[in-house]
Length: 326
Image (cartoon, rainbow, N blue to C red; front, side, top):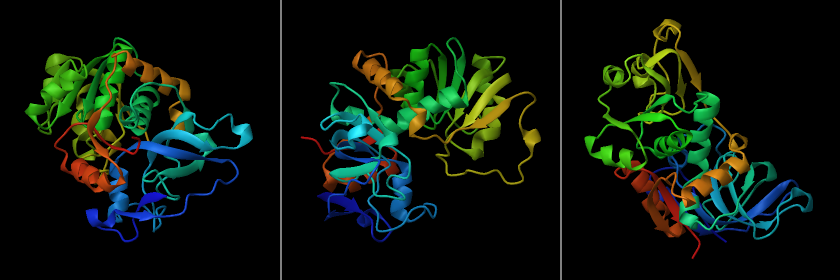
């Protein structure tokens, strides 16, 4: 089969298409014929050699993918040809991932689904929906009627979180560093787009004087203190991402957290997105209630470098998807 292999870390040239053996199916695992996959920051770090020691080389990257079952254990409940998604769990890091025509993964990290949506749409969803859904539920406990601030709103996770929150019945404030992105935020249902200059708590409180009920932090530790100031007492901030690259706060003191504001974090795994929830989200997209965060579709493994370049450039909001299906 054809696959993208990183043997020596580095720039885009490190992503090399090669012919490799089709992976064998071991006990408790299933083999998926990959139809599409989204490209993620994690894979950029793998390419550059900046991941943690879990990642070894040579490695086929790819922490998520969608496709159909090729082979599965008889007792797994999976059948050949069945539509499935998979993500996380060491895929593309401690074992070879989805940048390939076939991938093998543990049965426990496979989500079956049924949809008529195009593969390039479904391919944009598993990791971002898992992260957004887990952050809003496990991290924030968001409920209908509440106000949500999304810091880093034009990222793929930010766009997905906005659509899920609006479908839930929340009022959404969301940020971008560029005023030109306000239209992209409104297109996914954001009620109040905000241009982020690093200090937005004051403007948030002009809209919601007591502070928002919940905030999803995707920009990172560099703006966390400001995000905390935008939240009401007994409200919650969930730290999920660090798009600006800063994960830690030098000389952190717990008293930087405002009085009676809660701070949580969310890392997540495949099990945090149950198959029935993913199916419900696919149905909502098909019905036009929520939006798939697709930035651009790249056709074939030979275009993986273009997808990485597009992700790093950050000029188009949403997810870069590589489509293998015809």
